[in-house]
Image 1 (spheres, rainbow, N blue to C red):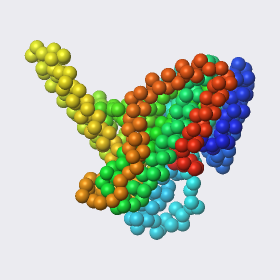
Image 2: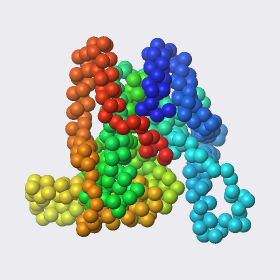
Image 3: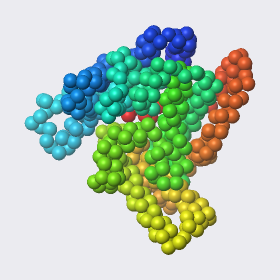
Image 4: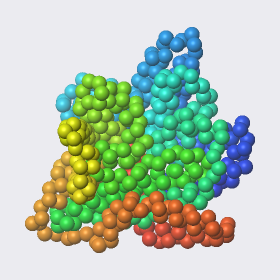
Length: 482
């Protein structure tokens, strides 16, 4: 049940009425939220509801066993079994078809045809997100045995919490359970701004780019001039940001209406001046998960091969998005860029220390004009690298990706261009990241001065405007497939 549907609006209205009445009841409130979350998931994918319970149950059992003092010496074994089980489930649903196709391509599937041939597997929506979220509970408990063991009800609620179960942000257990025990006061004005902002990004802006330039460029790039193809490339870069950050804004707003702060998932990523900074700002909950539960355990940059650790982390981050070599190449490409950024930064720091050792001050080394030029250069390099790497996400094959990239760089080719509105939305995407926080705060202040009737009319006006601006029908959120 997507956030952009009328069904969800009705569902959310009913949940909010009950939420505001029950949140003071510490015993009944978690059960109510659990029922609401399971109902939400059931309305969209009922046959996968048992899978939610299985993932929650596996992590609950692992935490409970790790909490038994007599079994303390086996804590690592329980964690390994839990991680292996959950990742095996995820791999089966996400990568089985990829494995079978690879074996067939290598001519190795013949003897195993009967064993491998299964009915077509349907990927459960949100599985990558709720699996990683469940694993964070067990891993955090392993690292800090003093944490109390949650009940199965609370564990299942943590994994299935309906504002975040489909596409995040990926939550951590400690702040979630703290808020469950004592919900924060509802900041309704900010919550409304976030929901309206998310709707506008998804329904009006992202959908326009998809329908008026991106789809055509990626299906028949030969029909477009180089500028037209570039509009499709930058348009998809804007589209995937508007789509996913729009969902995240809505998830954050809906959770805030319930009294939960699920955190930001984006922090103006396209204003980054280097690729390391981009990954601190893009899909922050996943980036932080991979950093804390994969990169640091591998040794980070302080133990072993820092280059290898970055490459492994980014490669697995790419494969997290799907079972295709395009995602692996995308991850490896970003891993190489991040590793090179580490090398450049380390060399810069060594050079600065050398200058300081002979008497130069920091302000003498970093001249303001030179720094401004470096930032602009870093911004242009980063946004172009990121945008061209997104081609691997949108293309259906490596061949199509190469065709689009080649067409974008062939300025001698004839063909149609892009509508002016597409370029304006790309620029608006950048402007929104530069001024987004200020605009949201201004809207929240305006709403704070309204009465209930005026606020209702305000919300109705913006919803109608967004629907009118957007095309007929709304495409699913891009990250639902991951």
